[in-house]
Amino acid sequence: MNFSGVFAALATPFAQDGSVSLPDLKHNLHRYNQTDLAGYVAVGSTGESVLLTRAEMDAILITVKESASEEKKLLAGTGAESTAETIERTKRAADLGYDAVLVKTPHYYKPAYKPEVLIAHYRRVADESPIPIMLYSIPQFTGIALAAPEVAALAEHPNIFGI
Image (cartoon, rainbow, N blue to C red; front, side, top):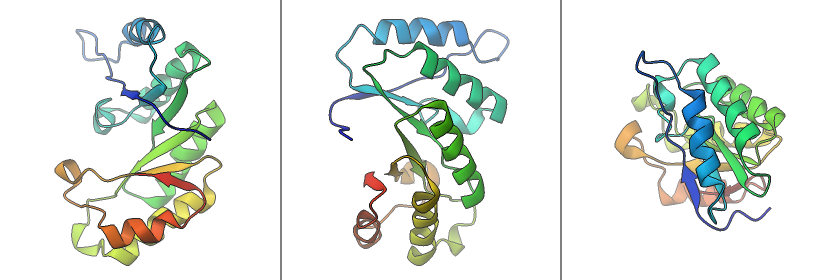
């Protein structure tokens, strides 16, 4: 699958009462659909994924899938603290018709996340994912960076397509 081009990191709009504003998200997507963007990334860092409930994430993923132009490729942020939760979120994105997922590094138990642990986490997610995964190394938020040797080892996996 070709993932070249520019993918907009979708912001999650909120209403005055603090709830997710799906009408505003639809409005934004309508405008984005009129551009030459290759696709969209839903519920990533810009989408404020860490502030959303599971139900809100699901509603956003559904809204983006329903509102995005069919020519646009869709990536969903599915990284969670546990490998099992990451896999569950990843499978949900695949069931909804997303083309790939963006998986951030788990980070809560920083001292435990040695290179071999991160490699095992990503390999298990990639093994169980029905769609390709992209590594998401965002040390400014997680405090953990995927180092070059880890990325090189993970690049050998056929279901990991980028970082």
